[in-house]
Image (cartoon, rainbow, N blue to C red):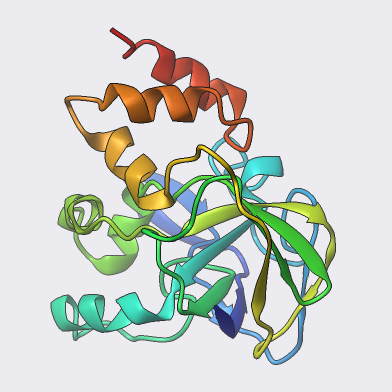
Length: 211
């Protein structure tokens, strides 16, 4: 995997249901390295810390390969790297090959794969249609958040070196499907619940689906 673009955002506001909402989803490419901190990318806007930022969502990665699929669906949008709100646009990122808990070295940072992105109304607003939320879920390639184990700088051109493969772990794609499927795969549920690369709060919610 290789970093194609590093992206950050300034706060953007819009009106939603009669109220002013602030978001950091409107990211743009940077011309210099970005710094991955333990709870966020330095200088990046995080408007709602209940669902973004923090230890398990310190930095968001999205696959360059998926851009062509979405450009075909939404050709009228103004496209640039960072379109999906990702801090790192990554060539070769494949959610079916990433395991939750995998540890990678990129730039001078050490990161761990945590959880996929779950789309919200702000994503729909940016794309001009709330229908995109269902399309994003159905497509099944959501990118991934990472936990920053060692802070450091990352720049365009840096690669990801696998340091440690998580044992007995489900892939990012499997976990994303598990989150939104009505019938939960019990084996995958078991793997998710015992995986400490996922936040405890999310694992506790999943326990309710154990039969």
